[in-house]
Length: 265
Image (cartoon, rainbow, N blue to C red):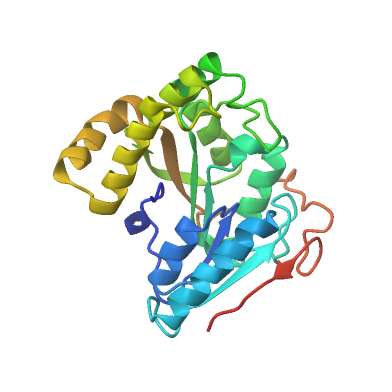
């Protein structure tokens, strides 16, 4: 289930891509499948182990071009272990809402993006997220949970005032908002509730078969209650590093917590 629209990213053979906060790896897999040289970056070693296994299986099964490479790297999004302007494309999907120091993370995302490169960022949309918070404290008040709710205008400004140009925005996962409202209403930990189980089966069916009825329903729901908002920015050729754009200590290449667990050629 992709939140980012890859057709807008121009990702292809030899494109250098980093998926920051990759989680289970869904966007890293798609970039690798399209022939990119991919870094799946996260601080969770357990998640990265699963991502590494799938990347390895993709390579073994010929699901990515032979020229593509992929590796998993463990580290801190506040101190990315790469030089300035390393990547053609930076993806940060559903991570900024988890990070207390989001301005520092945003500065790092921009720092490692090449001039002319594209950055895709997604976060939970304000209204669906606000309903979840209203229905359940358990939904967000937990270790590693959501620490803020963004308005789209606020998020856009955080990147625009650092010199990036917004090129497109859209909403995604309209079918998922009612699912999360239902989970929050009955208790986030009660995944075995009959209504929650039934809705989850429908979402899995939709993911596996992509029937026309759910595609149409989601297209209608996305502008109204899409669970996520996605924004696409370009680092313009006239980009000037802001005076306050200071690289965090340890952000130079090779510094900080970094563990490359696999490279796939």
